Structure formats: C-alpha cells, structure tokens
Amino acid sequence: MPEEPREQKAGLAVEDTRRPRPAACSAVAEQDAAGRAASRSTVLRPQKSNISDANFPVDAEGRTYHLGTKRGEVANRILSVGSEKRALMLAEYLEPVAPGRGLFMLESSRGFLTITGRYTGAPVSIIVTHMGMANADFVVRENRHAAALHAASSCADADADDYSRGAVVEGEMAIVRLGTCGALQPPAHLGSFVVADPGAILIRRNPDAFTPEGEEGGLVPYTFSRPIPSDPALSLALEQEAVRLLGPEGVCRGLNATADSFYSSQGRRTGWFEDRNETLLADLLCCYPEAVTLEMETAMLLDLARCSRGSIRAAAGVIALADRASNHFLAAERTEQLERATGQACLAALARTPLDDDWGPHNGSGPPVWAS
Ligand code: R1P
Ligand code: URA
Image (cartoon, rainbow, N blue to C red):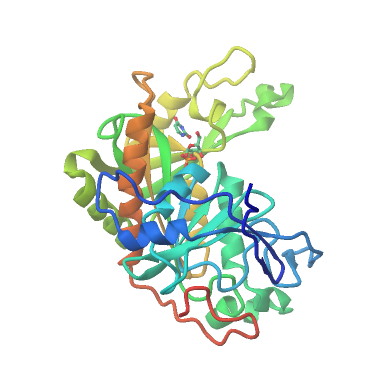
C-alpha cells in the first residue's frame, strides 16, 4: 500500500485523511475552484506542547488551548456549524486561500476543526463548534483572544486597537451560526430556515429548584432571560441570501430560544429524571409569544457579540428539523439539501458584509494564510 503523503510544518503534524469531497450534486451553484481547493487540502493537527498563562492558555506559538489556531489562520468572517459533517460539506463551496493553494484545515486535540478558504473572493473560516453554549464560548473567545491585551496589566486603559492587536483574528469579526433546531410554532415549520431576528432568549435550568429548600422556597425550575439582539444588517443579509436560494416560502424570521440542554430545558419528557418541565414550553410561549425555535448556542453567540466592545457582529439561522407540536423529524436527505443551500446563504451573507478587517503588522507571527 502506498504510504500516506505527509509533510511537517513548524509545530504541526499534517494528515490527509479527512477531506471535503469535491462538490457533487448541489441544489445550487457549484464552483470548480471550490472543488479543486477541497480535494487539495490536508488537515493539520497541532502537536502537544506546553501551555503558558492560566488566565488565557496559549502555547509558545500563540495557539489557543482548545481550538488550536493562532493569529492569521482564521478569517474575520466565520461560519460556526455544529457538526464536522456539515463543515466538510460546506467546505466544498470554498475556493483556495490563495491561487495555487488548497484550503487551510486544522483540527485541535479537542476536536474543533477550522477550515479557512475564500467565498466569492472573501476570506472565510468554517468552524466546527459542536454543541452547547460552552463550546460557542470557546469558539468566539479563542478567536477574539488578544495576546497584547491579556498581557497588559490594566484592561481599563486599553483602547480598541489594543483589543485587536495580537488576536487570533485581528479587526472586526462577523460570525454567523448555521444550526438545526426544534420548531415551536408557525411561521417555523419542519424544513423552514429560520433567521434569529430579532435575536434569542436563554432558557436555563435552575438546580437550586430541585432541592428541598428550593421547593419549599418556591424556586422556579427554569428561567428565561430577556431577548439578546442579533446584528440587524447581518441577519437581513442572511435572510435575503436564503430567500435567493430557497425561495421565500422556505425562509422566515423570529425569536429563537437557546436552551442549556437538549432534553429537560427544551421541554422533552422522560421518566428517568425529575425535570418538572411539563409546562415549560407553554410557559415560554406565554412569556414570549413570538418565540419560534429552540436550539442550544445562538444566545451565547449573540451575548458575546453584544459584550465584545463593538468588535463582533453576529447572526444565526437554523433549519427546523424537529416539529415540537407534531413530534415529526425531518428526513436526513432533506436536512442535507437544506444544509447545503443555507450554508451557501450563510457564506454569501458573510462575504458581502463590509467589515473593518485590516490586518496590521504581523509581529513575527507571519501574514495570514490567505495572503498571496
Ligand atoms: C442538538 O441536536 C444540536 O443541534 C442544534 C442544537 O443547537 C445542538 O447543538 O444545532 P447544531 O445542528 O448546529 O448542532
Ligand atoms: N436541536 C435542538 O437543540 N433541538 C431540537 O429540537 C432540534 C435540534
């Protein structure tokens, strides 16, 4: 058997086992350059190395602890997706980072896969975020991480430039989440693509309510946050691109509810645990009659963007694959068709979004991977 091709870069072991397939039977436009970029790409895996700084752990190269990427490997336009399968499928639509090269692909030891290429010419990264708010937090914070800032003794004195300098992603960032969700009520229905506009609320399980004292004190088992806004322009671009690819009947917008679990905090019932969630969905709709979808990451993404001192713009769109009223689940083939179409809508929305994304001097870390 021929030996697998291998090459070695500073601090990176290189594998070629995981590649996006060249674009095959897409429902929408295929791109030749994209197929070629995908088939030329290899997956890099950072080798284990010592980490410094317990406050914001990075290795000697400046690679973050969980995502494993460093400055210049991630574009200012990020598409966050929940699964590796979805990321590799959408990577088929990316063009090479630069002429004659493939896509940049790196998977960390924690399984975060980052794929950087271009979409209609604009540098874009697709990042496998996995599931839940803690993972969304890793993706946003480790890309925004600014070595210059955390080394400074006083954060209060830092200006916007300090926050950006030395970050994995320098300059303004736009992050779009493409996920799946449960549909609560019309206009969301099985197979809809729902843009989280005006934003999302957060549903949290309250562990104190499940103690004898909590019960005695009448603590509620689940709490709802106030709405957290999405970026209006980015959300509109996402909706317009989705309508362009799916038609207006396949796309709607509405308030999303992000839950801290798939089961109890989304009102799913099992006999094995005391969840006290019998009225959760009714309570949610009483409090937020406009809520249409349920999933697990959007509120965290929007909250971090809101708290990013103006450096991050965020939006989300979700494919409704579980109808919580009828209890039906979307067929796998239809889900994949929708992931392909809406994934391209997300990439197009990111690519057309104007950003203040100038990269400054690279301070020894080299130019970004998409610099030709
Ligand atoms: C649960 O099945 C997962 O699906 C949804 C939820 O938010 C959660 O992450 O989104 P993704 O399809 O993006 O993972
Ligand atoms: N993802 C969720 O979080 N909930 C659903 O019902 C479907 C997908």
